[in-house]
Each structure stands twice: as C-alpha cells, then as structure tokens.
Amino acid sequence: MKPSNDHADYQKAVATLKRARRGMTAADLAATAALPLPAARELLSRAADEFRGRLRVTESSEILYDFPRGFTSRYRSLGARFGRFMDKFISISLACLSWLFKVWIGVMLVGYFVLFMLIALAALVLSMAGNSSSNSRSRNSSGGGLFLATRIFDLIIRLWFYSEIAKSMDGSHARSAPRRRGKPLHKAIFSFVFGEPDPSGDADTAEKRALIARLEANRGLISLPEYMAITGLPPLEAERGILAFCAEFGGSPEATEEGTIVYRFQDILLRAGTGEGGTGTGWGPLRRPRAFSSNNKTMNTWFGIINSVNLLFGGYFFYQAFNTGIIRTTAQFQASPRLYAITYDLAASVLGNPHSFIMVGLGLIPLLFSLIFWLVPALRFARLNGENQNIKKRNLRKIGFGKIWEKPRGLVPAHIDSPAPECRPRGLEAEREKVITEMGSYSQPDVEVDETGTTIYSFTELEREKRALEAGRAAVNPEDFKIGKVIFDSE
Image (tube, rainbow, N blue to C red):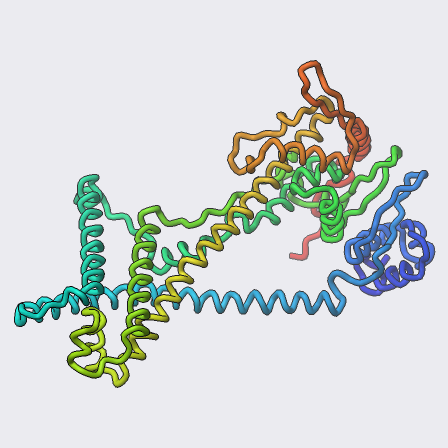
C-alpha cells in the first residue's frame, strides 16, 4: 500500500470530493477513488483542514465530510501564497526597520541630551564671562532661555548627586559588595521603547507537547472539550485547530456508538519514548502576560527625564528660531534671548547658515523625536493592556473548560477560579459566565437555581460524551502500540 500522504493519492481524493454533490464518508471516498480505507480517513482529515471542511454525524454514527465553503485552499491557493509572501516580507521589513529605528533612537536620545547639556554649559560660561566684563548692560528681558537652561542643568546635577548619595547610604557602593553588571544602555533604551520579547512566544509548541502527552496517557483518544481545556480556544476556533492538529500528527475524527465525535491518534503512540511526554492528567501550560519593560523604575524615570530635557530644548530652539529669525546686527544679537543668541553665535563660527541648523537640527528634529519617543511606548502600553487581558481570558478558559470537563455536574461560576494573577482578567465574574456560555455553545447545560439564589449548571450531554470517550479508551489495548525489541540493526 502506498503511504497515505502520497501527493497523487491526495490529489485524487480532492478531485473526488469536488465531484461529490453531497458529503462523503471515508468509505465513500475509498470506494469512489479506489483508495485504501485507512488512507481515505487520513486524507479526509487533511482535506477538511485545508478546505475548511465541516464534520457531521449520521444516524449510523458515521462521520460525513462536507465542504460548504468550496475548495479554495488555505495553504496552496494564489491568495494564500501571496498572503504568506506578504507576511514574510512585512516581517523582514519590520525587523530591519525596527533595528534601524532602535539604533536611531539610542543615538538621538543620548546624543541630543549630551549636545544640549554642552550648549547649556557653554552658554552659562560665556554668559558669566560676559556679565563680568559688562555689568552695566541689562538683559533681564531676554534671559529666560538661559535661565531655563541653567535650571535644567542644575536639576540634572542635583538628581545625579542625590541618587549617588542614596546609593552610598544603602550600601550600593560598599567595597565589600561585588559590583553587579547591569544591562547595556542601548538594550535598556530598547526595552523602554519597544518592550521585551513575548515570554509566551513558544506557547503553541508547549500546548502541542501537552496535547501529545495527554494522548500518550489516554491511549491516543481525545475529545474536543479536552482540546479546548489545553489550548484555551472557544469551540469554533477549537474545531478548526483540532483538524489542523489531526492533519499535522496523523489523527482522524470518528464517531462513537452514542454519536459523539472523538479524535484518534494511533500513530502518535508508536514512539520509542512513549509515556515520557507527561502523565496527561493536567491541562495546557498557562500563557504569561507581557511586561511593559524589564528595566527598573529608576532607569525608566531617567529616560523620561532625558527625553523631557530634549523636548524642552527642542521646543525652545524651534520656537526662538521661528520667532527671532536670522541675527544680522549686534543690536539684534543683544535684543535676542541670551541662550538662543549665544548658540547662534557659536554655530555661526562653524556653519554658514546657523539659523537653519538651529531651527531644524536643534529644534524640529529633537522636538519630533521626543514626541515619537513618548508616543511609541504610550501606544504600546495601551495595546499591551488589551493583549494581557486576552491572555488572562484565554488562561481562564483553560481553567474553566478543564473544571467543566472534570466535573460536568453541579458547577457554579465561582468554581472557575485560580489564584494565579495571569488567570484573573478584569470583570472576573462576567468572564466566568462567558466561559460557561462558550462551553454551552458546544454542549447545552441544564440550569437550576438553589435556595440561596445561586445558579447551578449541569452539562449532562458532556458527561455522556465523557463516558463514551472513557469506554473508547478502555477498548484500546496498549500492547498493540509497543514497538517491541530491535530485530535488525544497519550497523
């Protein structure tokens, strides 16, 4: 027999399904396409995943595969291929742009801060020298910019000084204590602006391992509610997900005598390491919410101070360059704001057009950069809250679906709970009710209210499905899936 994943057999099966006006069972496909029955079952699972097939159970407990959405492939159509190309192109482009943007941010934040501090220091020194040689000249009306620069410079020095004193008082600089190497500055800046990688980036792989462990411990059979409890997916998404899992790991849905659908993965049991994946008694791993930044609060505060300084200086220079314009005469120089005039004079000694340099280089660019530096973390913070709430809701669904499956009768919403903070989204009471509603869309519960007014849910159909699944597992002989001793070695 040719292997069931042979390309020609699969194309033959798809062509046969396209000609069928109604749904087909595995036996229909095997007879019409002249395929072995086991191969027909596996190929039907692949087709159902690729073409978004629908599964229906007949009165004789046979599974009927129907394709109401047609045969536009999720993986091989022109649109799907273009979508994958665009996803890859966008991913690579964003990675390159992100790297360039990160480099630009590090250079801009630190570079402009240092430049502005040097300008403030130079202006302060030149102003003091000018005052000592000409005490009679009054500049009260035009010293606001220099006063602002002086105060900011003084504030930075004081903050640094007090932070160093605080470190000395708490023993941070004690000679006996080894100096702990901190995070590099550029990585700390990136963490503040872009955050950290997703701590649950491998969650899909971990859930697949949990599914395989459950299958190994339960003789290769699994139900849709169990899949929901491991993945945290609601019923409609779980149905699509388990079909993709069947296509990936050689599983196939089948109907029990009671008419419920279970999913059998016989081939996954034929492993030399069977049983090592886990006991299968628990559910899927919880996903971890994302942190805004891995920096401590003090470091992020300093980044905020530095960016605020850049914002103030950039706004000041842009406004003064726009309002004052080009300085052409000594009288105009003396009437201009002192910090702007001194900076103009310093730039004029090097550049031919100091006005444009101040307006764009010291004004517009750092002003826009500082606004972007605030905007990106602000947008990320707003999006992060929504993402973390969805993660918590998915974790709560894992907890809730698992508890409903383990004890289908006598459930109250308060039972769906966990002390873990990653399982407690906002509006916990409403989310508990939603978990029950989502499971109810798969299996309608019986509802009653006790004398205290508490609503009690009993999923009797789910209990029947659980008994049928346990009977199916009991009928599987584990000895049939032992690989046995090695009888040939190529060495």
